[in-house]
Image 1 (spheres, rainbow, N blue to C red):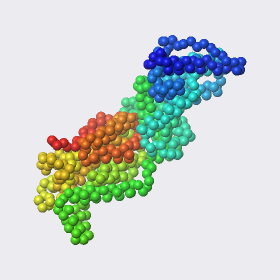
Image 2: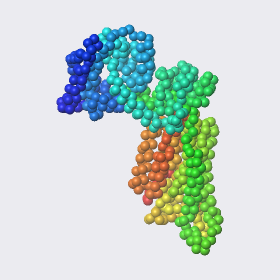
Image 3: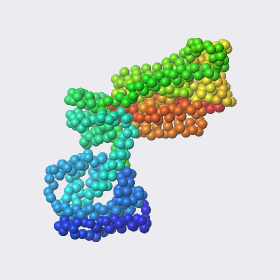
Image 4: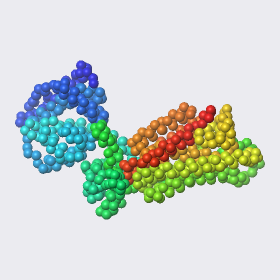
Length: 608
């Protein structure tokens, strides 16, 4: 806290005192100035008010400070004094300009409506100011405020609840911006399609006809957020094992009731039971009310907004990249290049032999990716949610970077999302390991003439994965990847081995916890949306650092980080139930999977 002896602070305080004692119009003597002496605040009051000010969210403190002429919220004592004098000035003004009157029903209704429109953190702070623990009982809060003279006018005028309108406008504007940015970081763009936000009429019907005390007991009116609304309350639906409230039971109960009472509405909206996606105030965190479950309602259409020409063109480009990778692996073979040069000099245009050479690597690479996508499809069919056609993503290094497989309808819960996300890379990794082992076995038992015709890969690329490199050294010899110059040295491998090695890297990259990748989906299911976004930031930062400091000679990790940042960082669509736990078994699987990813992507060192 800055000392009050600061000349700039004294100047601000004097100016504010002058403002508080001028231009106050008496309601009975128009035009006459009334100047009342305002006693300075006591030290105890300043200390108490300073603590209350510091307990507010940072954004509210900053806006309050700027509205009072301060550069920031660091000078707490001066800010609190200015608020004190402004409060006293407002009370004096209201004593002279407002006459006491009996409170009408209309005024009560207006007060209740205005209170419920306030942001949840502000309602909570007002409730605590009158000794209540939460803001669920609007009527009781307003009655207590009125009893303390903080709500309506009485014979003594306004006794404490006064807010400068310009200040509140600034607060709401800044809060809304912060809230929108926060929500948009947790929920995908498809939940905010233009013109798809649920209408007030549809939300009202869902609120009044579907929700109930036996399912979800709402404690506040629906609150608008970007793309939809949230409804705060308590779930009453019980799990099938009678061990307390359950998200799956709630979703099933709401689905059944909605299908019965308003099926037309459910054609236009989609609801989810998730943890609160809005910013949490310090008071809420201290009350252990962090990320309290809410009902989220969005538009029903969650299909990605992609130009219809993009997917086929990108898939075509990816097939070309895989073919180029297959042919390029032969460019390190001296016999292959000699034959190709001889054909060129002779004007021979028959390249059918090139197709025969590249076909095993081309089709085995696509086969691994097909197994990955089929595993996704099986889980989606089992759990009854829809997915779109995959988009293959090309890579300059290994043919494919991976694929983007959109989920177009919500999975049932985090368990379903986890299973879907894990199935693809897990099957892809198994297929890759089988092909790598088979290809290495074929390489070992080939005669020297056949080995001379094999494609070759640089040692530098083969050192990218400790898992893949370890298998190569295990079967081909412990020193085969320890060349003095990895950038120029090459190793002959059967096409199956090359496809398997690339598949290990591709599927391990897919498991990195970024956005709506398979790894990002698993992270959301394991940690929840908020922490998964934090983890994503650390992972992307780590990949960039590894790339820029030369720890990733092939630049595979850096390239993937750039791709994921621009094309797959958007969060996944919500599950119908994101509140129930993932479970111990899947948690252990997630930890083991992260270990596999680590050994698959950590490069082999020279001493390995």
